[in-house]
Amino acid sequence: MTSSELARRLSTHDRLAVARAISRVENDREDAGALLRELAPKLGHAYRVGITGPPGAGKSTITSELTKLLRTQGKTVGILAVDPTSPFTGGALLGDRIRMQEVSMDPGVYVRSMATRGSLGGLSAKAKDAADVLDAAGFDFVLFETVGVGQSELDIAKAADTTVVVLVPESGDAVQAMKSGLMEIADFFVVNKSDREGSDQAVRALTTILTFRVTHREDEWIPPVIKAAASKNEGIDRVLAEIEKHRAHLLKTGKLALRRIERERERVHELVEIMLHTDFWTAERSAILERELIRISAHETTSFDVARELTKV
Amino acid sequence: MTSSELARRLSTHDRLAVARAISRVENDREDAGALLRELAPKLGHAYRVGITGPPGAGKSTITSELTKLLRTQGKTVGILAVDPTSPFTGGALLGDRIRMQEVSMDPGVYVRSMATRGSLGGLSAKAKDAADVLDAAGFDFVLFETVGVGQSELDIAKAADTTVVVLVPESGDAVQAMKSGLMEIADFFVVNKSDREGSDQAVRALTTILTFRVTHREDEWIPPVIKAAASKNEGIDRVLAEIEKHRAHLLKTGKLALRRIERERERVHELVEIMLHTDFWTAERSAILERELIRISAHETTSFDVARELTKV
Image (cartoon, rainbow over all chains, first blue to last red; front, side, top):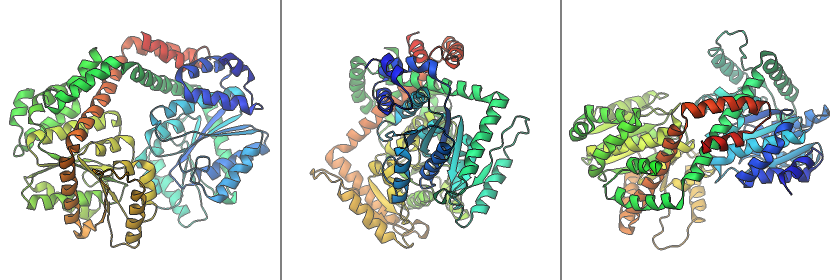
């Protein structure tokens, strides 16, 4: 099927076309380019939400419960799961699996998991391509579920219009969030499993940290901290309300358009890196490297000089 | 001071020259290239050990206790700490700080911490450059202490001759190790804080997992799992014995030279990426990007086509 045929068939009702289009952007960069060119005029409808946090925080439960709630409002939902600990991709609890199965049977929902290992370099670019496919197909919401460990996963979460960071009450999670860069990307925090001990302290600790970051600009968004117990379906309505509040804020301040431009800027940067790398390692340059590695190990030259020489060829 | 003057002054006794040389490789890539060229003939003496693992596993305690033990054998030690949770770089416990202060007062030890935030792209390259400085200065051992979270930190640990992964007995750590890629880079494991409950089970679980990986080649190295309680100075002798055993294995099988060649191969790749990126974003290309971002947001073109166009300029 040509890219333009595939683009024409793409709709929330044609799961086969959606699956095929995502496989196409996953498998070949040039094919992806051709398809995305066809999809460009159809983009911009979907609202993109990133759901991230450390392993075991309950991201997939929040994702599935949020999806169910959106469905009761008649919204269609595309889910991209890039999380080795998620029920979409493997290591799941029985409850999670059943919950997900329910969700994925719904014709208004499309669920796709994307591999993490081995392809980290291009994964973030591919996840954004797949989100464009879902957007062009007409889904109202695209949810990225990614585990907040590693730069690539952070890049994906950051690519959303609204980024939700899910934590558990246990002390240490907030500290880890600060260290791992989750703090910078969060539009709001969900302290999940809030029936556990220490959830009020966790909310207070986070709120205190966040207060120090306020710059008192008038259009400033201060990331709220809300509580949920997703597996008991508590607080999911607050999660959705917060998403809508943040969306309204972005629209009112004109930040939504800016954020989407920044997203495309990072995407061009990322694609340029991939293309430069792919174009660079020709047979000739690879042969030079092999020859020079012998000289490096004999201490006759350095990796710096070899790299410099190669980039001049 | 010129690179050749600095290279001449460099020795384990001249801390100022060592500090200056590391600052030089940290701050400017071209200066780094010139200095490393001067240092090339002096390389190859130091044995490089990577010490990595999740936050809180006790890497810095192992690093300082191992250093003390090496000093009793008259060995000089250079330490590079790339770990936001380490006593070298900040968030430390009082005991860790005192321990580290003791070690760093010793004239046969040089301790340097390297920043993690903001410079992740080039950090791994810079840590390897700094290790070359310590090697050329004549240190017998270079210890990299890095927190095993994130690709850059894994790259650093992998750059060692022997890589030690430190875990705690708590269940889940072994599972995390598998997921985060620590399993692939470990030459041996230390289950630290072995006075805690569950340490024997943790050792057994790891050993079982590792058994499945054996390929029964004759020169195969099966990563051992040893126990330690570094803060009580228990098991540090076993850690050093394991390092020496692995070193002997690498020498006997010829793998040490191969491993060092692979390290330089990855280093050239890394430097090429950095150089391509730096050379690429000229004022002209940046201007094209700004212009095209407007067209992307009007859905008239795609990030893919813009990236393709830019790489053709």
